[in-house]
Length: 94
Image 1 (cartoon, rainbow, N blue to C red):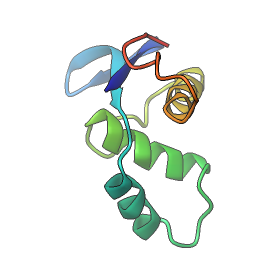
Image 2 (cartoon, one colour):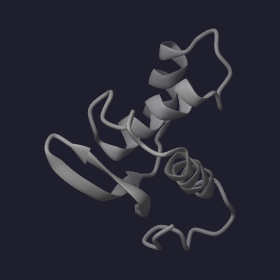
Image 3 (tube, helix red, strand yellow):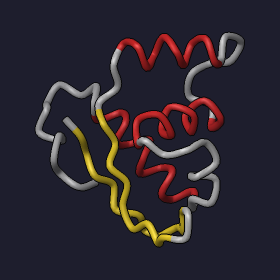
């Protein structure tokens, strides 16, 4: 299952304008890799969040560095939505 985040401020990645990102649901393996990558940092820091978004959106490290912070906030809400009690977010744009 995935959710699509429409960017308020499109970015260019590899010469292509990106207007939306598709984020897949996180798995245990994602969290385990993430914990190893950030053993001394609390989850929820911007660096930590961006590393998880890179993994879940299937983009290369650094591709999301040009995102506007308003779009980062949208990604954070979409990620948090995966843990809500309703699963109706799977195909709804944020």
